[in-house]
Length: 412
Image 1: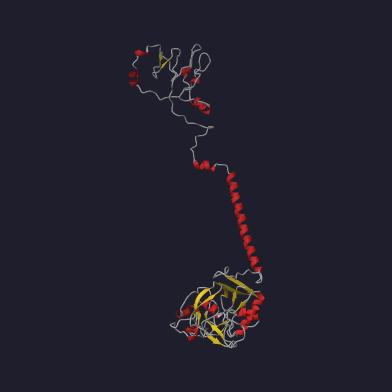
Image 2: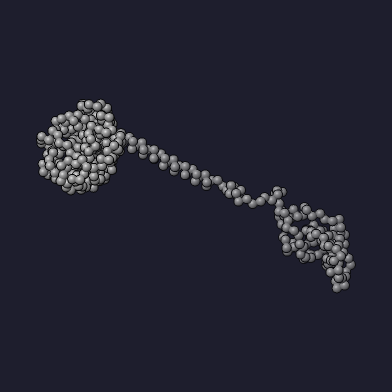
């Protein structure tokens, strides 16, 4: 065995130079005669270097090592980089007679800096990797979503246009109207279009109520009793009192004393109000008429009981707030059914004959034959608050021009 005096390593007798630092090896020695610990204490070991044994020529012209060190296999660009960084010492020169045989020894070296295509290493970035994904799939998805949204938008706009066009073209004779007991939910509304004007009809769900007033009710008249339970079917009632523009559209005239298209028509006789209903029915193909006393009171109460005169200023135009005239319909609060001006503004004609209570729809009071006395309900702009009650009745002859009206429509 031969010893390197620089790195204190031993090599095979066949080698002349140190494979680590290229220094000349000493003569053969007895390995048991050297105190290795003493030698290592005398000096610090030199930094570990990485040497490519293939760079050391041999006498036979072959590579000194046939295999790479087992701790690090150099190949490809790394091997080239390692060779470029290793500069052989001048002492690597050998005579032609020198021999070099493969020697397996572990040489420790720090992990090399890997260089790709002569560029410095790049740190891994998840965002950069995400941004570098192929864009074809994202682009197709975006285009598909935009396409679907465009189709939905076009369909929505088209549907709105179709509905608006259909609504404009619809005539009263072709409108679908639910008037059966099962198909007339309370609060539903339809609009009857007549000669350029509109008549809003509100569905009233039928039921049983206590008609009339008790003896204890303030402002009560004797003809408001005795009370009795009365049942009315489902029906439609005009949401507002018939206005002057609506009356003129059907009748061609306007008898009102207070002029204004949105004011309720007044100064109408019972016969004229009935004639309005007949003409309206002819123009629309539906059976309109004046409300019965029971229908009117049921609609006015809207599920409530009592006189409610303390709230007259909220729901009615009467002598306490009207200024001695009528007012446009729908300006006061509606009742629980959504009906306006059931109290005050103008008296309203009922179909019923005036007869004593208890009320019965089958005792002849709803016959349309000429009679001496009919019924007015609701009070007016010149009435006291006590007349603006659901149970208040006014008996009059059918011919004075003293009232207005509203209409109803029942199942056929």
